[in-house]
Image (cartoon, rainbow, N blue to C red; front, side, top):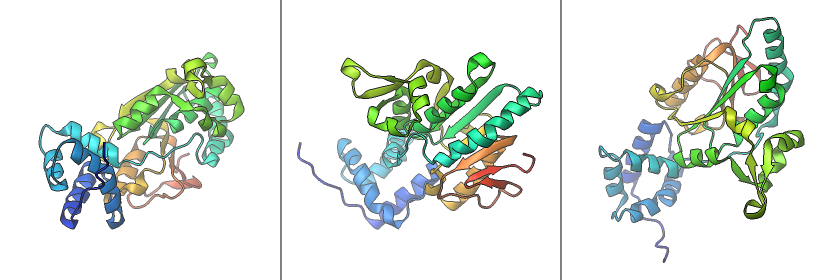
Length: 284
């Protein structure tokens, strides 16, 4: 089929989508994102047989069109991720958080149960990394119960995450002991692929969650919340509101992990930085 190229998008139409996307998902589409919107949504407009972006906006704002609105957001989401991305965060867990959990559990000050939330999990590399690291240190046979909740706005990304299947080229960032213990190497028709083993799958839970709408969030508390390289796409008011709500989902001794380009801003008084882009409450 002939590629018809991008559709024209007027400044007025772009403003309509800017407002819609911010209202629904908290995402800020700055002036430089106009070309991105055109490139990612033109095919949807044409697939639906619509004459313009104006008509597409009218469709996705119509009651009963929630599925197409979700598909629109899927197209606009940036799903960039890696296994063990920002390695210093995982080293902090190994060297500081995990030993403290062990000490507290041995003294009866902590139940041997850990709940972790990967908020904005994309195609799953982050929550699977966390699950492998946790199971290595706190295996079920030692009496620990581990749960990793993985959520994302994108239904497409979540479907990929649930599969737990990646090209073997992705294995390079996984520490060899964890790779051997928790990943299965594909053979025959699956050659060149790797799949998460059953131990890892057993501790993972997946759900679609819009971080701009706290009413649909999972209940806390969590020992760890990872929300990395997500809030940089949010408008400032939504970012501050979401950060405060994420901190409220932590246990008093919990930790919040943000991306390298993110930091805590308004509405988060009393929280302290314990390492680059890692935050805790004063009581920890």
